[in-house]
Length: 238
Image (cartoon, rainbow, N blue to C red; front, side, top):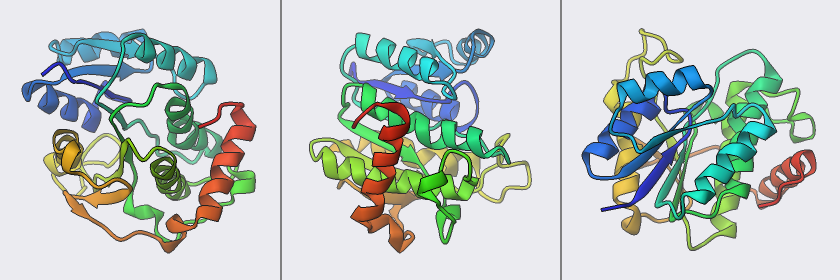
């Protein structure tokens, strides 16, 4: 097959599970880890991965490092922006959940498909774009991701762009009381990767079905305002 897939935040959790499934189905999967120790553990867990790219996505230098290494590897069929944090630290939430996928989308040569991880928690979330770096909840970050997804879909019609709500699953982030299964959490990402040519760009999925979303997501004014703010903060342009 020789189709390459890169998954951020894939040293554990849903990213790792998606990677294993895609490798089993014949894809060349590149993992991502925040540091060398996590990378070592990831390769021990998933020895058939092509490699693990190391970079702290909460810092611009880490993002630039990862982007350069991906570009040096050539064309990718799919990039899954899976990395995320659930924390009361607004700035860290912003840097990992929003800024990282924006910067990587800006710097990495466009793949055939982009998948962003969202959440149904985005519904009715507060999003103050003017203060996004220091006043952002997890829910607000997922609203921002859907706005980013829609903007990217508008900008790059030749790329299949989607967002996925993996549900509330029993990962380290979700906790063991989560009602959905782990398979529910990664199967849509795998399905989108494998069904790419039949996917309509710009949709939001939950368990392989198109879902409704907060009506603000369709506002091109908000999409543009978010992306312009991220450009002003980083100097990197979509």
